[in-house]
Length: 308
Image 1 (cartoon, rainbow, N blue to C red):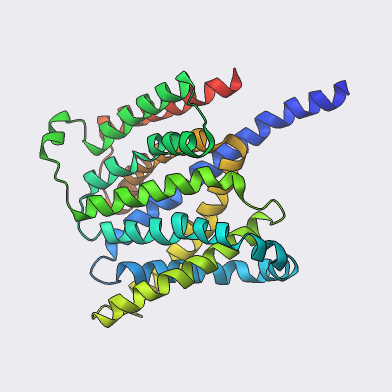
Image 2 (cartoon, rainbow, N blue to C red):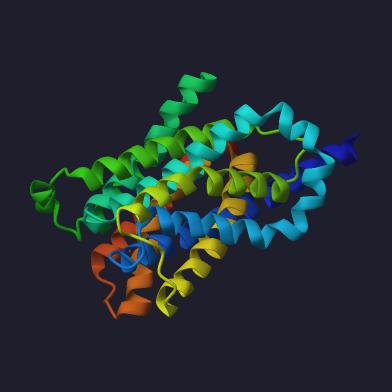
């Protein structure tokens, strides 16, 4: 008995470390998704890009998941309402609204609105599961949010005075809210389904439910292009922000819980700055370093309550 308990204590830190890595990779992939989505504005329509994202992702997972999906179809049919809601909230609406918002909003507004995710997740966790945030969690969210503000405001608090609320901001904020609900509902997923099969089912739901939206925008004169730049974008959003990021996120939430995992969303502005430096030649300034330090310290604080 003593040996088993000791083994469990050794495994817990290892599992948490793996979850931290998976969540960081997910944030890096989603930061790239924002860059690609913004780069394709005017070339690829938002719901068309979302359709290609889920189609590519499903095709990647299908060879590994179809056998299990068929074998466990009774489980899927029994929980189809929940799976449909999960797919609509976390994939169809969140992603579609995000791409739609990028058509109109600025990067600084988008960064601020996405940083509301951890706080909205704490609210959703209380509403759905009556989970109360620990004081260190709240402190960690606050400190990390200061780091996000330092980056998106470029170290100038006066930039807050020039923010403007527009339809792009509203779309992104709505997407962040749906993502928060998706995150807290992950604890209810059917345990009979493996992570790969679950993702394949959600990708299929997202592809099917976003199709009418793309058909509508296509009828309005915004079809999907098949040029090289667009094709490369489809491949990226289908592999990294979809397959890799969702696998990492779902596993991270399962290991750490929704509230702790959601704090990693504050890494996205940091990774966006790094990608801009690597691919756009932008310089890393002092406010980037200060923001990074605050973000990591906030994550550390928020995870201290579980260690204690």
